[in-house]
Image 1 (cartoon, rainbow, N blue to C red):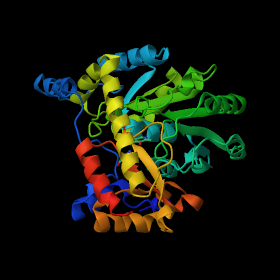
Image 2 (image 1 turned 120 degrees about the vertical axis):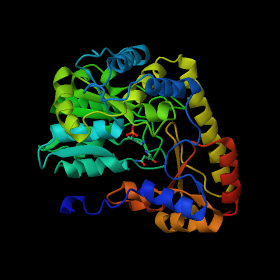
Image 3 (image 1 turned 180 degrees about the horizontal axis):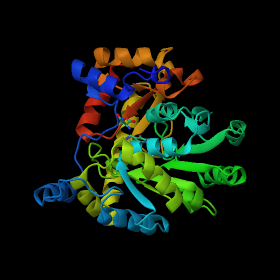
Length: 380
Ligand code: PMP
Ligand code: GLN
């Protein structure tokens, strides 16, 4: 393995899911729902397979999906993207992010991203021989500090890679925070990659894409995927929307990563994106209830979580239970009470006070969250 990829090892999510299986624990580690998405979407995939859509789809993705993505952007955010040239279908948001970084970074270029940082970002930046410049979001609110953001800008800054709603903190960027990012990007002529995979999983407040800010559409690569919105994380259908120049650049690298992916699922997601808004709101409502249920369980266990406005995750500080390291806590937890969680320190270059932060996923059925809460109560 090349030097720059050493240290990435096996992802924390795979490690913790394996531990959950080994110990028969309730898995609140890796963020994936334990129920499938709406029936009509599942039926759409079966119909596409039975209907003979089983060969390579076109490079940019099937046209009905690109049209559905463009219509979704218009309906929810008033953003106009041309399905021919401004929309690219990818193997999940993960590939869209990696392909964007590989397309835009020369060796040594710097990418500013929030810390805690979603695990694939650091690895993708390393693949490109680029450099991650973290901007820390601190508890309890995980809001953006403008001075910290500005302090990371240098002559080598190429990209801002922002994620809102933010994994793992659950922070949803405010208008003010988005405004600072837009202002900086315009002033320094930077491109911004926005990871918006949790765009529909906002429980308090609203999600506003950065591309809706004046002057930002032309310098933003807006990325999302179907996994979270429709509870089909295994389908890996994602997309990027931007200008023809930027999408063409990303397509150049994307085509040699996977070429294409998920033909039949593309048909199903095209239908899913056209579901009435109320159907998508049902998923959001279910997750909001999950958040509140797990928050109550964690609080009863003596682990009052930080605020969470969106995503699948609650963060707690296990220092409250006397632990000095979240990794120790997460390794002990399955054996002690039969629950798996993720130590947030793996999302930091230097965790500081986050050394004792632990992330719990609440994208699970109420029965499972009740079981997890009963088990966690033994910690108190
Ligand atoms: N970005 C963030 C912030 C995530 O939490 C995830 C995980 N699901 C992804 C990207 C990856 O999304 P996908 O499965 O569509 O590749
Ligand atoms: N995004 C999910 C999480 O944060 C996991 C996805 C993955 O395993 N790559 O838990």
